Image (tube, rainbow, N blue to C red):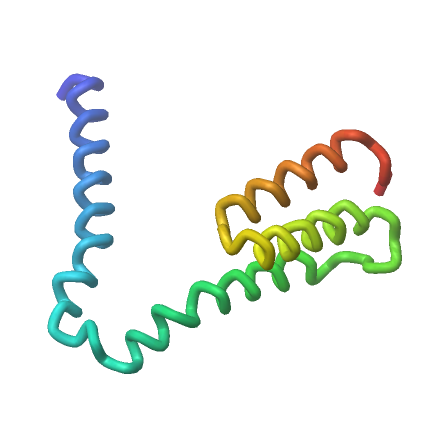
Length: 110
């Protein structure tokens, strides 16, 4: 089998598997979509996962060092942007841009 054919078949297989794993829950759970547990999980699971990711990312930080200030400033900016604008994309992009600009400026050496 030619390398190009092998590569194309691999990509097609990976894309098909990804599509099936994304679509399968919607097909299987169509009848129980209004179940209270699914409604609860749909509403509260994304914020809980974000808090979990946040806690995991700062678990080894030394909060008393100056090296933590860029993270703290950026986290505060994300919180303020989200409270004011209620737009997760703007909050995440704004906090990321602020963090990158602060960390690249060298104001707070680790």
